[in-house]
Image 1 (cartoon, one colour):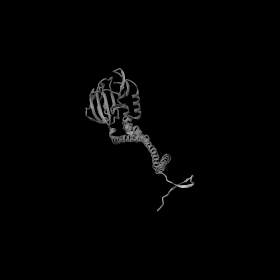
Image 2 (cartoon, one colour):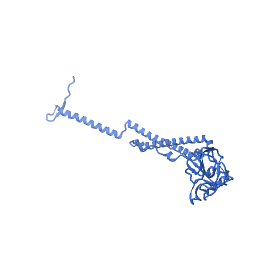
Image 3 (tube, helix red, strand yellow):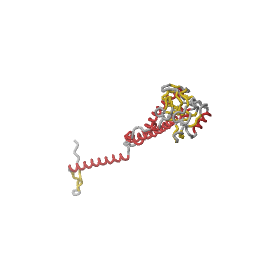
Image 4 (tube, one colour):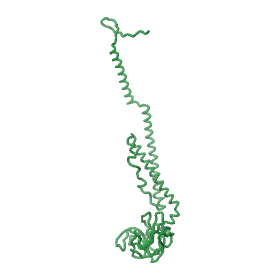
Length: 327
């Protein structure tokens, strides 16, 4: 059996080593001090380690964050390239495709309007890299919206191309009076009115001709009005309005008489009446208008199917002159 260990202390008075018994309280104090010192030292070492040394999980998170930032830069660069390609398609859509088919371009408000509101991206505000995520997400959302709008636009262009022959037949593309029997006396724009005695918008073109000269439909369509001074056209005299479809309408005013009726289908080149001077008119002529999608446009741009290049330039020159209209 192992003998208990004793503590000895040198006594200078007796010059002998004597047994020394440590009180229980002293033993407890020493043990408590050693434990407390160890705890404090351990805490200090942990704090120092946390400040100056990275844990495996922290190193992994830093690697992931660096990778995220690199991928965000790559993604933004790819979005930028996609935006350039889409912008080129949009420009061709507006300046080429829709010009060929005489169609209004897509409005900037429809194409570039934002998606959602400020709250849509509020969830990113609490994140450390929230601004980067917000910017990237917004660019992708905007790109998605523009792609959707452009997809719809190209569908419309495809439909216009598919119905090209029908559109060309209905488009008002000839002079409403035979070119050797009329003359342009007033064009589209601000003109002096001979009866009202003031300058106002002349929304068509005046073609002077002899009384009774035949007037022809400039494209296939359906007659939607054929009467004297129809509603909304006071002072226009005898009027014929033809709906050609695809957004086109043509108006023929101050006629001597109309030889067609409302609801009647007509073909390009078919006679619809004769030249006169009815309504607020200063002489025998035809007032002719082209209306596209509810907006009056210059009719001379639609005479290309009936004139040589030289004759077309001559008509343009006559129409540009700022003179007095006949109605």
